[in-house]
Length: 209
Ligand code: B12
Image (cartoon, rainbow, N blue to C red; front, side):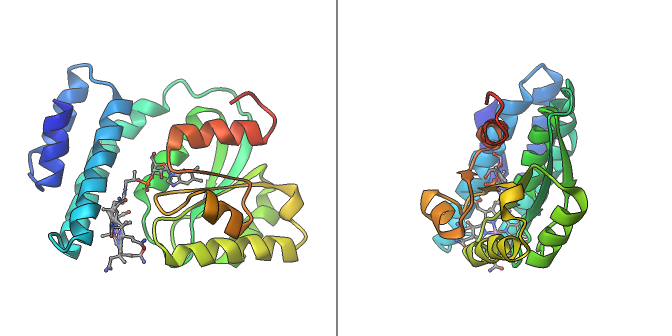
């Protein structure tokens, strides 16, 4: 069933959303559905890179994913734990991809983080202002495109300039981050997986991940 959903998304089949709904209605696991959707987006991205798919397919794929997430994410929200920390989260400047950030947000909230969501294409100054205002334990930055890497570094630099760098832990996430990007930007941790990202956040604030 999951394989069928994955293929339907990749082939831009309108039935994909209903198949996903049916999967959950029949007791399927939201987490597994999410992973299948993510794999589908990876395949759509790969086809885009090879020139087999165009921007219209990226848009349509994103829209199908969004529709599926509309009824999948609330199922992951249940069982929210007691508050364990505060996080300021945003997709970085130049980058408008929001799906992964929104998923990570739900995972973080379900684990007890209070999340202040700054949205997408977030200017460095907006992160700085939000840290001043909300005094979070963690700053999370989501980044899926290469242009966003510089934005993340600039954001970390601006936090340093404002004397706020040592008051927060910084985690970066999304398809464009890895250990090298972490080192380059000066972040404390990175993850391209929401569940792992939340475990790292807990560790960053001294809790067991
Ligand atoms: C859908 C999509 C779009 C949609 C976005 C819709 C939306 N509302 O988000 C639209 C059509 C808008 C789009 C636009 C573009 N896109 Co696009 N897009 C994609 C695609 C296919 C899927 C993205 C996605 O949602 N993935 C699924 C989510 C769940 O994965 P994720 O974001 O990685 O999130 C997971 C983890 O990383 C983690 N996570 C996410 N954020 C965070 C944050 C923290 C702190 C932590 C800890 C964890 C975490 O949790 C999530 C769940 O596990 C990707 C391909 C891909 N492989 O990702 C290309 C892709 C990202 N896009 C790409 C490109 C090139 C573009 C455009 C430049 C295309 C163009 N010519 O205009 C524009 C850029 C616009 C901009 N300025 O940002 C490239 C980027 C290449 C690069 N290195 O720069 C990709 C990789 C496709 C490719 N292979 O070429 N895109």
